[in-house]
Image: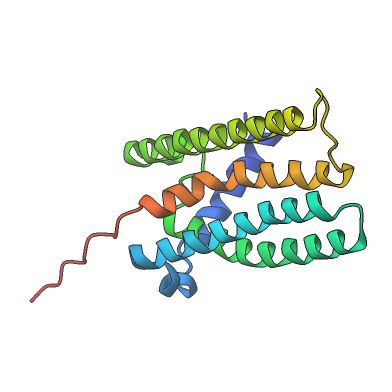
Length: 184
């Protein structure tokens, strides 16, 4: 007998599989070029979140920093929700379904996307460490003054990037489906 958690997970995956074939979004995801435009829009939403951190860095503590960041967050959220929903349908849920529901090709694509995303986020973290070391070196000490208002938005932005970068990578790499055979 399966436990409550396993039954809930299976029910969630059944609902997700039912939503993956929504014909209303087909015009946004039927070709590779359209999916790649969606990925660019999703990357733009992530870039907007990272740009918001720069705004906080230079303007905090102020009402201007808060208002500009919240505006950027809402725009990124509006774009991101649409992009993630359509890309989830386009990719067949490769990044969110359990491995038991995926075939070998999908598992391979998922692993490649996770590996690439891991390398990209590692490179980003190395750049952040290098920038903070440089900032500490130029300030003449071992300490850096970081606005407290940057902590939670920074953690949120890093988490969102970590969660959605594999989906963007799969969406970018996904080839067009083979054409349907037409009977003459």
